Image 1 (cartoon, rainbow, N blue to C red):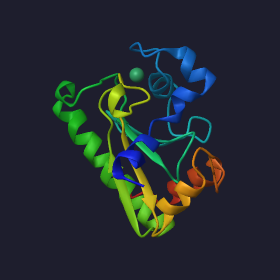
Image 2 (tube, rainbow, N blue to C red):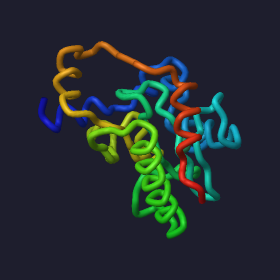
Image 3 (tube, helix red, strand yellow):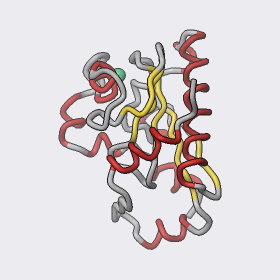
Length: 170
Ligand SMILES: [Zn+2]
């Protein structure tokens, strides 16, 4: 599996769900804005952590257990449009997510990445989000084998509890 193929595999599955597909990509109307409005961290929203500017959310359609999306709470599509506080928050949240994933899952490695624009594979291109997910030696081969078969080895509420308990203190 090439890196390009892997990247394409990260195309946010939110867009594939009926709910997100009908929600459009307008400010305030996208799936991430709806999550941002839903309030504090909870199993129901999948929000694991929030700050004044930023939130970390479980991908509802993960490619690996613990697949997190770190994003500004505000609807912003481009890095250039982030405020300094939002830029800091994005990296703060990404760093925390990486630490929590290492502690909770003990992976062999991590992928961090953002797809900017639909052609780059962004499922919700108007709302910038950083993927953070654990990787294990050999898992790309596994993913090739099960191409187009979505495997969710752990229920989302289990991932949520696990990551909450391993999330670094602020
Ligand atoms: Zn949005």
